Image (cartoon, rainbow, N blue to C red; front, side):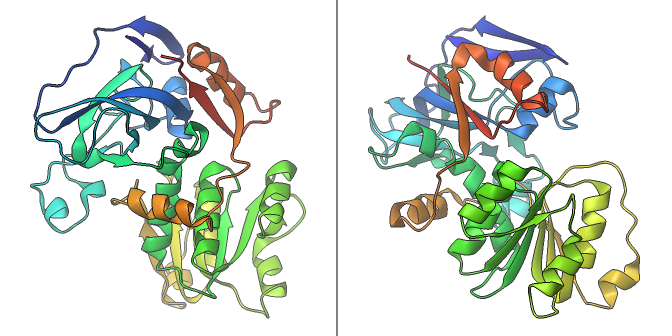
Length: 339
């Protein structure tokens, strides 16, 4: 079977691997039909992902059709259209037993720590597999994993109706966070430097902040009756944006960080304590796939205008280079398979 493997930094090839097979009674074998390229995949290619191990078949955003199931699998059958949660947890550590498998002490993520979904076939466990409606296009079902990140961030922030939420970054993940916040009934500000991303945010009912010309903190106060944001989600995750996130939060606010930057920020404790802020990390998703699927099925959570390019599987390196090239406008790039 064909797969996209990164052997080392900036060394990607399409390889022929032995086809994966059902080995355990709870295994599900899936024929992959579409995969999404995420920033973490690009980071593995560039060598900037601190979690990566090489060589690696990348990819954690995947959707396809069930080809075969183990003898104990009851909820899936051949022909079902499915998506895969890439989180692999041990089920035995303290975090798993406390209901937080996304931060399992022995955590593995497909496409990062173990082989991922950029292959013609994959075998996963039934508990990692979720059925979607047969009429849901693959270029929509492949977005369920990114939206699970959006749900996780909103759940961590306890976003409620009429909250004011400021999402820093209007790319794919920023958009999933913002749209889920709207789904929960929040008023959403979102910032970026890219005009096309800001135009899209405005199209979907968010209040755009152009950081090229506008101070986010002052803009939010001017457009929110002098008050800062109840929730700030940093989807850019540089040392500077984290500092701005803390300063943008209102008293009793919640600040959510999605990043893995190893560079420290300069944040004075007074900025946290004086406002009694909750500062929380949000990693992957904690079994949020069913929430995403349900929200999509209601028609109240839009997946539109997130995919900018659909390309053939064999064009994986070309697609990654397009994302890296700042002169080329890209959003989510989806690779499709005709297997």
